[in-house]
Amino acid sequence: MFSFFKNTKSSQEVITKDLLEERLIESDIEYDIVEKILDSTNGKIKRSELEVNLLRFLNKESFYDTLSLRQITTKPLIYLIIGVNGAGKTTTIAKLGNIYKKQNKKVIFGAGDTFRAAASSQLCAWGERLDIPCVSSKFGADPSSVAFDTINAAKARDMDIALIDTAGRLDNKINLKNELIKISNTCSKTLNGAEFYKILVLDGTQGTQAISQAKVFNESLNIDGIIITKMDGTSKGGSLISIMSTLRLPILYVGIGEGKDDFIPFDLDWYMKNLLDYIFSQD
Ligand SMILES: Nc1nc2c(ncn2[C@@H]2O[C@H](COP(=O)(O)OP(=O)(O)OP(=O)(O)O)[C@@H](O)[C@H]2O)c(=O)[nH]1
Ligand SMILES: [Mg+2]
Image (tube, rainbow, N blue to C red):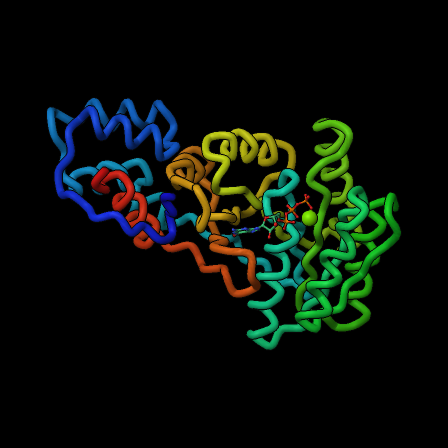
């Protein structure tokens, strides 16, 4: 099975236009970008030429280089973590908590997913393993009240960072959107209007579906940055090109497994190498 993270197939330097089209589509690059790449190709293409073409979409040295998380310096610093169910939100919170702990920051978790019965205990179990306190409430409680309690606990306990989990599924999508807007407004009010981060977690194996999710969440919530999970799985990685070029949102980290350390900061050179290894791999 192909893994974006660990491709063991050997690579070729030149491929035909037909194979290029096949591989670009398979790697989940949006078709309008595929068409533009094919338009500038006659017969065969070299790896180095494709790399230049792809980087053109990211407009490196102009907008890509300016894609970074905006600076917020308030204390406590709040991260509201959102995304559809199963994307990897709760695991990602554990991984982020682990990183910040290693930086000697004081971290607290907020178990804001009160919709799924086991969700709070899943996050609080990570908290126990990582020695991070976890604010939770009972199943079915108002998630906004968990956000409120978490922020107030963070203030009272002089925490540096609070990571707040949210539900990925409610009875319907409109309710999910409205609930997330309500939680976000509660965070803002509890912080007396101070800014906080809204981070979207996307499942890397979802391909182009991940882009439409990102658009919907971004329209209603103004996302600050994205974390892509499961890049160790069947992800072909091409959707990240669209996330960067269409949504113009910074990709912060990439999840490469289920453990607390299976997490790396996103790096464009690493990404390009893996994507090109896939496109130019031998059958
Ligand atoms: N292979 C792999 N698995 C991951 C990664 N991140 C999360 N997972 C797994 O994906 C599954 C879902 O992860 P969760 O963190 O529970 O996802 P969630 O978004 O919180 O899901 P809900 O709470 O149901 O909305 C779990 O089995 C995780 O172990 C990753 O980077 N790689
Ligand atoms: Mg969860």
